[in-house]
Image (cartoon, rainbow, N blue to C red; front, side):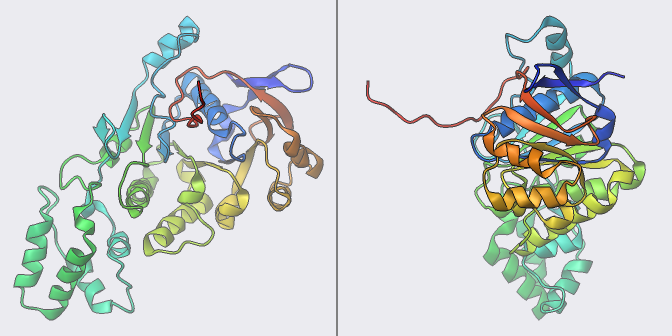
Length: 360
């Protein structure tokens, strides 16, 4: 079996290896700002690309992984050739160049459409019922024609639904493919890696709806048992313990469902965030692997100690003293809790901090 070389032990410089077979469990990755969390996450993902055939789906809010297919000049020839030959697809949002990140409105479940339109199944029962039975052609999708048809029906409840759609302007989002290609079509093909740049949309609900569309598709096809590692960077944006909007509640509920039931279907989560208290507890408690970088807040350290009992409290508290690039690995994917200095990246890291302009 090929293991994943992700760095060296802090205490004795011995190589540190992860068991790739144990990524068939959910993984939690944590570290405060400046700890090197995103860079180190890239180290692990590159090793998975090199030494497994596990497809990666990366939900990327800061465009940090959009260059995952660009090999660094310092990378060895063998690894360079391997990485360069992989099918890595990147979908961009906003004004960035590249293939557009789009999903089809008509592919959403009725519950997801209701969340987008802020329709409550009980308080807005009549509108919800119309939405539930509304037939919309997948291609081409014309939102203007749909609204016009609802108004032309002469039925007051349909007219109210049309007014809601028009007033909220959600059908005008750039997220929608309007019957054309959807990112879920690509994900269903299982490329080696699919990176979704979520950060460029204008409406704050759009990245969440994009994630919801993708997760609904994976869940709908779960019985096919085709493995995929769902990597969610800055996971607190999608999996809050206190979701507020209808879209946030629907997305959190789907992630809780995947966390609880997805493992047997090959839907495995890899969640990265700055603080464990920002992740829904029903998702956090399902994680069997831990990667911990520098964390100073006592409340966060206490939470980690309670949830991840396979790492001692002393080991977790040591995270307060970590410098950039140092981490604790514990759980099923490593033989014993180990303190690690992360290795070098093989591909280009996008994003990064903005430098303070200094006088010359």
